[in-house]
Image (cartoon, rainbow over all chains, first blue to last red; front, side, top):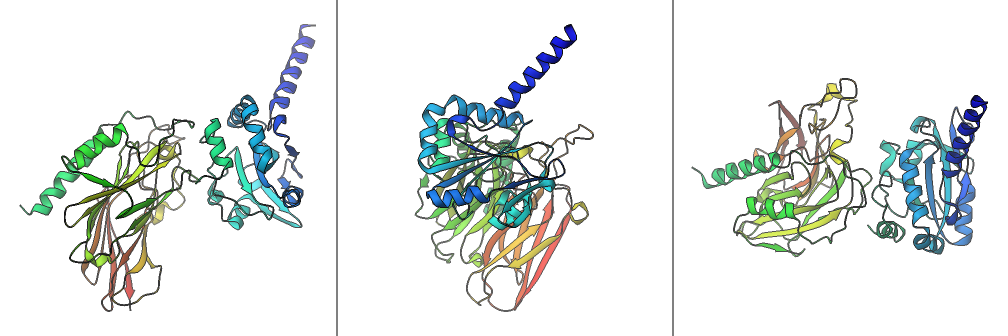
Length: 174
Length: 276
C-alpha cells in the first residue's frame, strides 16, 4: 500500500513538473517538439517563420530544457508577470517554444528550415549569431519572418528577468 | 627622473592598488540588477577616478571620444568594445593616453594605452570581460592635459568566471598581426594584433582539481612600426582570452609592424608583419 502510494506520489510530482515546464500558456506559445530524439534533437522552425511572415510579426523563439533550473526560473518570471507582459508580446511577436533537454548539447541540436538542417553552431554562424561558441539553456532568438536576427541576444535570460528589462528586449534596445 | 616615467610608475602603482581592493567582490552577479543611465557615475568610478586623476576635471560627452558597447553582449566573457576618437593624431593635439575601465570588475582598469602620433587615428577595438552589470568607460588624456570621458552601461553576468577556451595550450603566446584595411602610405592603416593566450583571471575553478587556476594573463603589448613606437598597452585580465586589439598605424614607407608581448609569467612573445 505504502509502495503504491509512493509510486503514485512520484508520478504526480513528475506530471506536475512536466506541466510546469515550458513557456507559460498565457503567452499563447506554439510548442515544437524535437524530431529524432534521443539521438538528435532537431527542431523544425519552418512553420514558425512562415507564420511570422504571414502575420507580419516577429518571432520570439525560446529554447528551453525539461531539466533546466534556469529555464524554470525564466518561465516562472514570465508566469508571474504575464498580466504586464503578455500584451506586449502579443502586439509584435509570435512565441515558439522549442522543448529540449540538457542532454542535447550543441553537437546533437539541429535546426531545420525547409529542406535544410544545420547543427547548432553552424546554424548560429549562418545567422551571424555570436552564440555559436557555446549553447546555453535557455536561449532566446528574435527573428523576422525570413529568419534574420533582429539583434544580437545574450546567452541565457539572466539579464532580462525584470519587467523593465524584458520590455527592453521586446523593444530591441541595444 | 623622466616625468613620463614617473607618471607611468604612479599610474601602475594606482592600478595595482585598485586591483587588490575589491578582491572579495562577487564573481557572478544575477541579472535584474538596478539599471543605470549610460552617463551616470557609480561609487566604484568615484573611487577609481579619484585615484587615477586626483584633482582633475573629466569632461564628459562624445565630442572628443566615444565608447561603443552593446547593452547586452552574447557572452559576458567577451564583450565587444569600440573606442572612437573624434580628433586625428596630430603633433599639435593628440590623444597621449587612454584608459579603459570596467567599474565593477574585480580589477577595474582593463587597459592603459600610451599613444603616439604614429597611431594616426586613436581608434581601438577589443573584447572585455564584464563581470556584472557595470559601466564601461574610456578616458582620453590629450597632449594638452585635458581629460575627456565617455561611458556605456552594460548588462551581463559571470564574465570573469566564464570558462576559458583551453583547446590551444600549445599555441600560447602565438602573436598574429593582420592588416584590416588598404595600405596607403602616410595614412592611418587599420590592423589587428591577436595573442593566443587564456588570459586566466585567477577566478576560474578547475573542475577536476577543484582548485582555482592561478592568474596568467597578457600584461603588455608594445607595437612599433619601422622601429618607431606606435603605442604601448598595459593590460589586465579584464581583457578577454586571446587578447585582440584593433588599432591604426601610419606607415611612411616599407617597414615591419611588430608587437612585443609580455605576460604575467614574464614570458615574451613577438609577432611581426612586413608592410610594403
